[in-house]
Image (cartoon, rainbow, N blue to C red; front, side):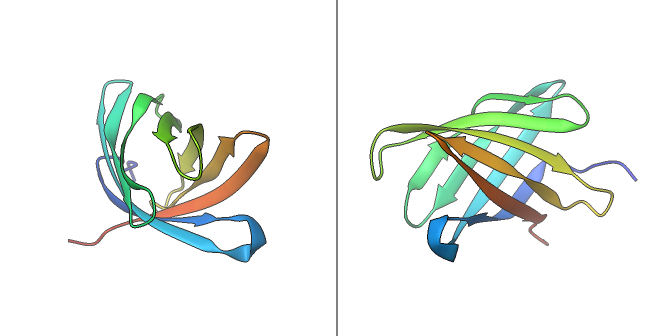
Length: 104
């Protein structure tokens, strides 16, 4: 089964204190380049920057200004059931996240 990257994903980030932060992530791959947007109620729309997909691992960055100016670095893989998992590196922290394709 091929991995379906180009779609809209429901993302859940495990934030400190057990809080779950949800967002909608739209991804599009062209060769090794990954583009798209991230949209959450709390942080608004963020453009995906420096996105790459090497056939196995996805990496990208996004920037936020809440609670302060930060660059978030994402690393993820997609399993055979087309579920995404990975982590976000922000400042000194690493946060886990999961993603499932939005069913049309």
